[in-house]
Image (cartoon, rainbow, N blue to C red; front, side, top):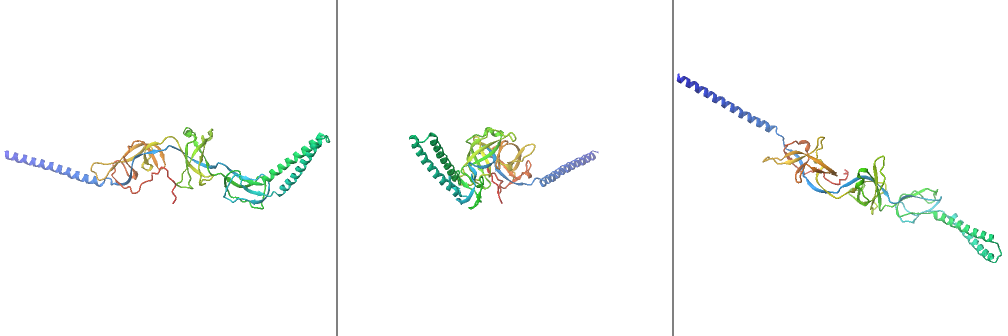
Length: 376
């Protein structure tokens, strides 16, 4: 009986041991296949470019679009009508103040002036004789007064005719550059007809408008920089010279006038230019390329590169940032980052928290504070 019970107990114990062994083996096999499955479905490393967040000095600016205007600019016209005898300038040439531009035919007026000169001379002789006769009481005071009036009248007519002759020589009213003319010798000009444009180009004015919120940031004497798409890479500097005292009630903008040096005469009246007024002292900001920012309705984020133990590839961690002003291709980060952290600048669409990455900085997004349009 004891032997039978011992054999039964041994069978139970062996069975239990086999069962426990089978359970342990099953769990080991399951864990192995689970690890293999997870390894097969792990995120593959994504290739991105990165940059280090660094501080840089920013000059606060108020930007706008302006229009250039000549300090002095007119359409040269004639006050009197007449036949063009000489065109004394070339289109596009520089002119000096007082330089003759057009000579009208003044022959009839010159002849009239000579006649009036002779008459005035005779009237003066008559007046001198009448003075002697009046002193000798040979004539009355009325005769002397008539001679005086006649002499003065002829002198006035003589001066009027001389002024008319002077008007027939059209002169440049100030120094500047002439435009293109279509006037030719032999052509008849009426009073008020346009002859040529004359523009003073150095210096030159730039007029631009700013919203009323910027009124406290603009002062006379502040430095202004302008750029024009006609001259890529060139920057022209000047000063704010006038601020309109009234704000436009329709747009709530105010007008600013600045004077820009134009020694090479590159800038022309009527051109549109980009303007930037330096406002306030330079500021120091943590700066990133704008491409590094993921703009979202719930907040702006960046991906920060982290090292995870002995892993073969670094991983990324998404953090929220508070952004400041922008400058060209750059944006200032006010909070959320520290100087020296490495940030993903391109390839963010492929990333999420914990994604391993491969860094390839052979091609970097632009980070130019003053970008210019690129033409292919």
